[in-house]
Image 1 (cartoon, rainbow, N blue to C red):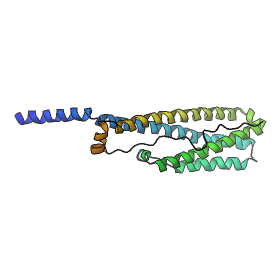
Image 2 (spheres, rainbow, N blue to C red):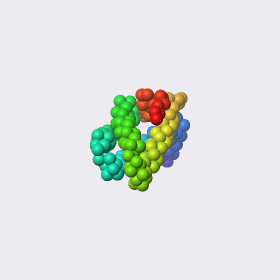
Image 3 (cartoon, helix red, strand yellow):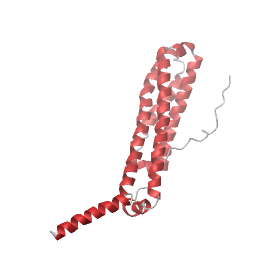
Image 4 (cartoon, one colour):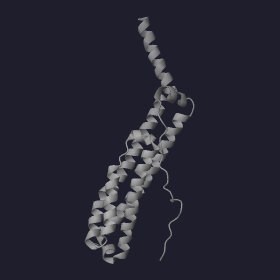
Length: 195
């Protein structure tokens, strides 16, 4: 009976020490990073799902803009080939590759939207207008999802670097720092508008 009581007391003490050393906090923060990353992927997927409709709408009005339409289609295909798992969130090269593919798609979509300015019939099309609004909303969602991901990464990275959690991570969990989203090269320069 005394041995059983000692065993229960040791388990309770271990649980108390584990919760006090940040073990659970680090695990919880890592799960928040994974959830925030899933939101980022979901918003990118939403954009990728919209693109075939956008391309088909533009094709009907601007069949001679084949090069622009083809670049959008190819960029979307490349985005589908670059997958990033939760384990890759600590890998800066994998995250940069993912961002590069998404950046190519953003550039192709920007050129496609310029096509609308050249063709008044396309600009007046209700379908195209609806898709433009959908894309604008999607881009805003992507931005918000990226910000939330970066916030989750900041919380996680802080939790594994501050005392006493850093000791727990060093000796028990051995989790690596997660990579935040970074601005693309040249993003700090405002685009020039020429009329």
